[in-house]
Length: 220
Image (cartoon, rainbow, N blue to C red; front, side, top):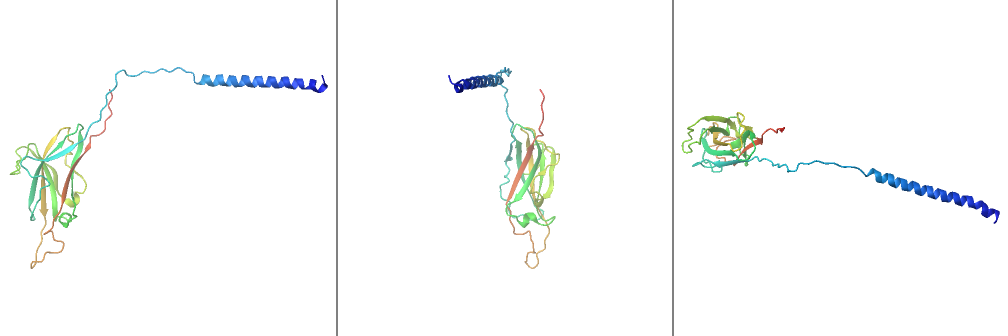
């Protein structure tokens, strides 16, 4: 055997030992990695499912028996006139409401509704503990003022009724909604004054609304 062949033998043995050590290291790492994912898990749960439901907040309105609805036309008003309409307002949902109130808007933007203070259309609301007599406007029970006469120009957003009124689920309210025309004008020689409230028309939408009751935290 040549000297060169003899000299290469130790190098071959070293390479073999290095490869064996590397293989062992890879195997050890693999075992270590597998161990990370080996664990115990325990759990507990209710054997009968918890039933959960959400409540509803609903407000419905209907004309009282024998009464015209708020959609019925009002014609030929004169200053000082009052047109009463009678409605039943019901919180028909399952949740208690709060801050019951009313907004009134005029789709035409008429001067009839947006005149100066003390001039034009205004609305007031009262409630009766029993249904109003629609033909006479009489409350045979206890009558409560909910909204003092307020110009429609100030009713673009909800005005919360005095109280405030927080309707219970299923509660119904017998309301008298009164439309007023206020103002004083002088017509000279058949000529209407500038900014007159005469001969005008409007298109009114009455929107009653309420909020949900205050949110609660229950411990049980």
